[in-house]
Amino acid sequence: MNKIILNYILKNFIKTFLIVFLIIYFFGVILNLFEEIEFFKETNVSFLLPLLLTTIYIPSMLVKISPFIIFVSSMIFMIKIRNNKDLLILKVFGFSNLKIFFILAFTSFFIGWLLLIALNPVSSFMIKHYEKTKSKYAKDIDHLVTFNKNGLWIKEMLPNQQRIITAKKLDGKYLKDVVIFNLDENSSLISKIKANNSNINNNIWKLSDVKIFKPINGIITLDVKEKLEIKSVYDIEKINSLFNNFDTLSFFNILINMKDLNDRGYNKILLGQSLHTMLTVPFFCFLMTALASIFTLNTLKNSDNLKYTFLGLIACILVFYIKDLSLAFGQTDKMPLILSIWAPVLTLGLFIFIGVLQINEK
Image 1: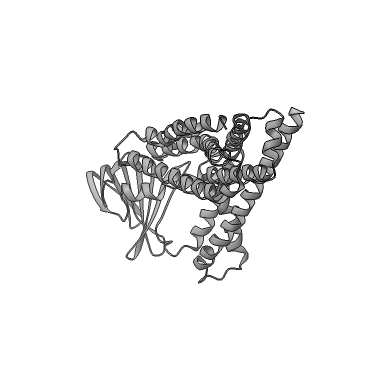
Image 2: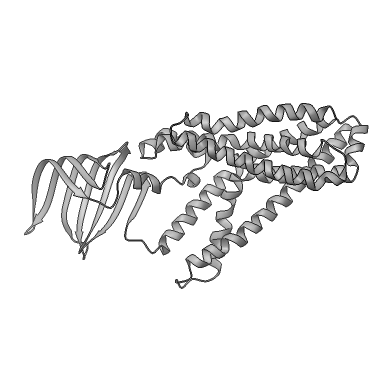
């Protein structure tokens, strides 16, 4: 009998989660579709392209807000079994509030890991396609920056010429093994500059150990300089800001290739932040189910549904606000970054532990 009841709880909870997940997905598609249509309004593309981009963008957002989806699903499921008296029946068969809570909470914990392991790599791949496709239609296409397996590549448009910059890697505020191609309007080579490194702390780049190659009357001339300064529209802050979107990197990609990504120029601190933020997802799913249990299993009165649902949503919003506030403290060095990511989990876990003990007495 216990196995049948357990299957009933799991089946209906997962069903509720999937329904809420799909509702939020379609709601997200509708909202984001207007933004994509606005982006493409001056281009000659069909309606299908904005729709396609919207459908592949939303899954990444859903992974981020999965604890909120879990919270809403848990609230709906527990209010439902309370209203139709299934909760009383479960208690008759020996399922206490605490036992029901642990079944739902560990299911949510498993769903969190499933989203991280199964959906996150797919959503990261789709975000890569999303950004690649949108970049083709971006108005500011004259200036491009990209990281790939060959290092950093930068394209700049200058008056009557263009500049292509490559570097093996980004190390702090320095570019290593820099090669700069200056081309004219017809893409013919004006000069080629090689440098061991370049300080890009500001828009005036300071190159060291420089070799300048110039074609003159069909002959390549060489000019060696110890230092050289060039002006660029990019500096270290702007380049890093372009790669703050780690949605294109999956959990496994960061976990397995952390060193390789760092060598390619990705900021080590931001990589760690992204990894630990994703690691908190299953734990937040567990805790949000616990929070929903505290608000719904505390009473059997149907008249309290609206009150506790409202309080639950307010509490959920506060949790996400505190989570972002704590992260802001870490990003501004007011507390260790990793601690700022996990502090909301630990703090919420302490309060929820007290609340769960209370619902067990009901």
